[in-house]
Image (cartoon, rainbow, N blue to C red; front, side):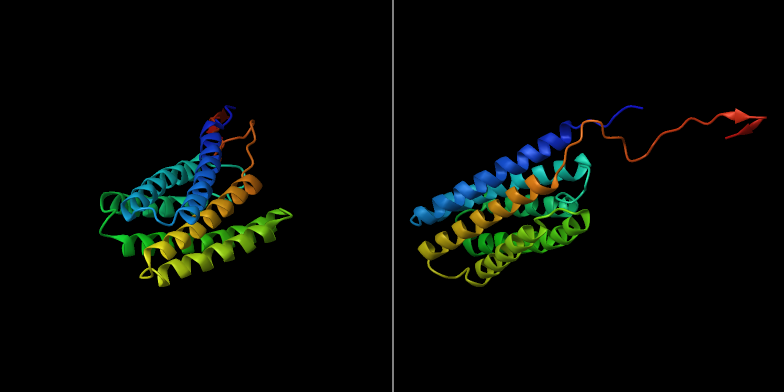
Length: 202
């Protein structure tokens, strides 16, 4: 029987790790340099959302073994790609929208990760509680970003930085702890050939 290719799983896992690190780096940059222009922030966030949405879609269709980290990534990946495109092409005039869109996306991701943490507990992953804690913290920061979208630009940049950093840490730990790549993984549906015994198809 032909084994399932692990290439999409590797691409998705590596993509998640790279994007998570970039989110952390961008978060640190925004915190350290709150004077960055609105247009630069908007372009960076728009590109990051689009790329992360693509990675999420790859993850969903990769069919990893546990199906934990990527289980909600079809709808969520499409959502953040759409929001990312809107943000990317309107970086100057939609700062409030950028904050609300990013805040809602991260809040939803935090809620989805809470579910993933509960599922991880059922799978016997020992540090499921750490995913839960990170998801709650990230979700709360996402709420603050939505509520405080009308605050000053410098403060907003710092809050954006905290949001991106927490999201990066959450996704990095989740993908490392829950995505298991097994080289000899069988397809979900086992294909069989029909044969006849005594004139009857079996």
